[in-house]
Every structure is written in structure tokens, then in C-alpha cells.
Image (cartoon, rainbow over all chains, first blue to last red; front, side, top):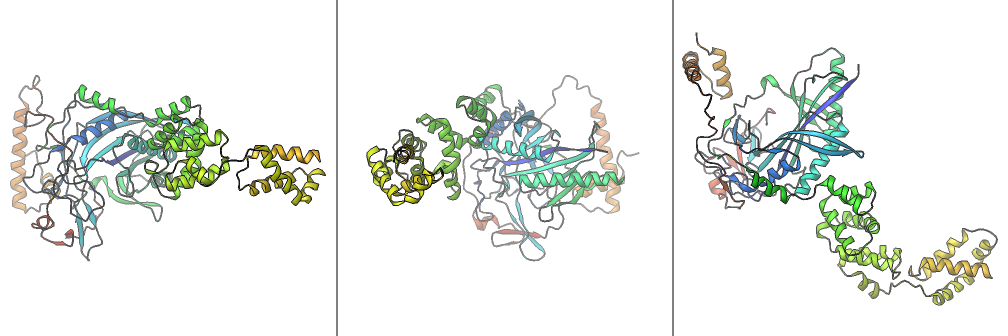
Length: 477
Length: 100
């Protein structure tokens, strides 16, 4: 029997608010343990949480980007459980009235548009971090993360392969980065993705019994966990075993999932309304204000970039991978660079310099205008493409205008016919062998002579003119 | 006959991390059963045209601006902690994997 895998995702995103969701403590990852805590996030009796307005704004922005309906009336609830990742014995979350619900998201898989349903996106507080490296028999708790703004996005079980899931997660991350609502740093836990995975015979309508996989630290980990779970579940079913609904942990070292807890022993969270927080009522005007502030989103921008600049789907995809790179590209073109040349320089040499320097396109010294000016110098024949490749690292280091670097180093291309002819005549005299070879029909000998000419002029000779002169001289004598 | 069984009481006690003796369980079977009976009495009321109450306060949209305020001093943070070391609160070692 053929089986197919069915996947839904639960994604936790730490929303980039300056302060925590219910108190004024700073939201900062790199800080000494318990340095950003107060009576509210420590869960002291009598402390009063108050909702951060920016958390609502940014969460609505995510909801709108995911085509969700925004609740006109929404409230917070208490999710009750005992575990030392919070001290109140409940986490403030949302139960039956999430802020955003019933959305959908389009994303590309190998150039094809796929669509996934978004069940809901609800507000909650992040929990404290446990440190098990303390002494024997004890665990340490750091409450800096407790109370950090957290948005949980839940999708419909619409995904049908590990590859498709990987593409969706990347698209979602790209969207969140475009929105500027989270740094999506997975190493620091700003973005955490947990797949729900089940299998069923192809053609069967009913879903199989699902497992929820936790502790996955990367999107490729999610992909591997799905592949592993698919094999494990199919194997069990083929042996006639009955699957149980359970939570499993991903063991990245061994590449397997291991049981964590079964549904029977899972918590009964006994949600009830949080009396300390006031309901959230986002009316049409507020929603509209946020909708108007949304940036152009990744797929739309890619599509427009393809159309407006006559670029390939591939080029447009690379350029719009981040909003910052797309902005850089458009500024470069606005400064006069032909789109295709700007694309090649940005995604080629410039990107390589940025990667090597572990820099970011938002804070490099070369401005888009300078890059456009450099491309202009190639276009008008002032410098060769080869010289441009040489001066780019200099521009990257110093932030100097390309024209200044060219002048300072005497790199202006030699296109003067008589000057070049003199140099080339000398080269022909110095290398009678290759000249003979060429004349006896070995055309590749010309390449050597071009190389020598470029070398003699330190790359400044205009290669087109060198070729013209060589053709002329080799044929006339 | 109470609507609540001893097993129900034990289950709820377990969720609340309470250990009850037999007398307490017996007492709670009746008390919790009485509460449910009272709910049944309330359910007899006709609430057809009454909006459900979402919150005890008749308010909406009370927010704080996203501004960083001073956090507690290290001394104050650990003042009530039964046990701490360095920058951390200490609790008995967490053995199981029940993190939510």
C-alpha cells in the first residue's frame, strides 16, 4: 500500500518589541541571566500585566500578511500547567478567541505556487529558560525570556512533503523578515518550528494518528524529522501496529525522534479567561491603518521585479530574497545602472565580498549609487570589467568613489590605438614562436598574445581594441 | 448520587499537584458535586437574548507603550527565592521532558 504524509506546523515567533509583552523589562537575548526581570515577569502575586500596544500592531501585521481575519474582539487566557519555565503556574496565552484566524499563505515550490491554510495566530508570553548545567540535582532558571512577546502561528494540515514544508517555512521566515516583526534568529530561539506529522494510505480522506515533534532547531531539521517520522509511521502500520498520538523529541545527533509524552499523560490545561488583562478590540480603522503600513511582500515583490526590470525568475528570486537586497538593487538601478548588470554585480562579486566579511547589505560602505557609478565607468569604456572586479574590494573597504580609485591608481583603460599598437608590436617581436604558430593556423596562439598584451598594460588595455590590433598586425605581415 | 466520582477528584487533584487523604476526597466528591448541581440550576434560566460576558470589566484596549522600564536590581530579584546561585534561581533538577 502507498502512503502519503500529512503535515501541519506550529510556529512560535518572538516578536521584536523593545520591551516585553506585559511589562517594561527589556527584550534582549544577550544579557546576564535574570537581569531583565520585574514582579510581572517573575510572576509575583499582585503584579499587574498590561498589554504592549506594539505587540498587537505587529501581530495584526503578521495576521494580515497571512490573509487572516482579525478578530474584532479578542482576549487573553490562562493556560495552566506546572513546570519551572514560568513561576505563575500558568502561561498567558489565547484560547478560543485568537487575534488572527482563518488565513492562508501562498508560497513557491520549484517555481510552482502552493497554498496553505493558516488556522490561527495568537498572542502569548514566552517562558523562562532552564539551564541544566548547574550543580548535581539542581536546575537553574533565567527569567529574561519569560514574558517576551511571542506569537504562535498554527497552520492547517495542508502540507504533503518534507520539501514542501521546508519551502513554506522559508517563505514564512522571509515574510516575517520583510514585515520587520522578528529577527527570526533560530539559534537564539526567535523562531521555533514544530511539525505535526501523520501518514495515511493514498486516497484515504481521514487523517492518520499524528505525532508532534519538538526540539527541532532548524528548517533542515524539520525536513529530516518529517522524513524520519514518515518512515517510522509507515513501517509501524505495515507491521500491523497501532500508532498513538504522542509528542516526540528530535534527536539531531542520531537523526531520530524519541517519545516524550503520550496524549493520555499530556496536560489538561484548563484554560480560563485572564482577568488581569483587558480584551483587545481591533476595529476596522485600526486594521486598515496597519494594512496600509505593510510593505510589499516577498512574492509580489519578486513578481514585480521580474516584470519591471525584465529579469529572469531566478535573478528576481535572488534579489528579493531579502527586502534589504531588493532595496539596494532598486536604488542602484534608480542611479542609472542597467538592471541586468546591477543584478550580476550585486548577486555576484558584491555578495561574495559581503559574505566573506560576514557583513550585511544594510551596513556596507559601497552605496548603491557608487556601484551604479562603477557600472557606468565600464559602460562608457573608462575601465574594463576586469579592472572593475579589481577595484570593487577597494570600494568595499574604503567606501571611496570608484572614479577616485581609478584616478588614484591610474587604472583608466587604454583605448588609444597608436599607444596600444606600439605595445603590441613589441610583444610580437618578443614572442616570434606564437606569432609563427598563429600564422601556421594555430588560432589559439592568439589568446596567449592577448594575455601578454593585457599583462603588459596591467589589465588596462581595452580588450576589444587589443583584439582588433592583433588581428590587423598578425594578418598584414 | 454525586456527579463527581473519586477518580474525578483524584484527577483534578493531580493536575493541581495536590495529595489528598481519603477523608478529603470523600468530602470533595460531595462539594464538587454540589457545585455542578448548582450549575444545573443556573442552566435552567433562559439566557437566549443575553450576550455572554467575556470579561468582568466593561473595558477594551488598555495598553502600555513599548517602552523599556527599569528592571529589578539583582539583590531584589533573589530576595524571595528559596535558592539561588550566581545569576540563577535554583530548583530541584528537572528530569522529565514536559516543557510546554
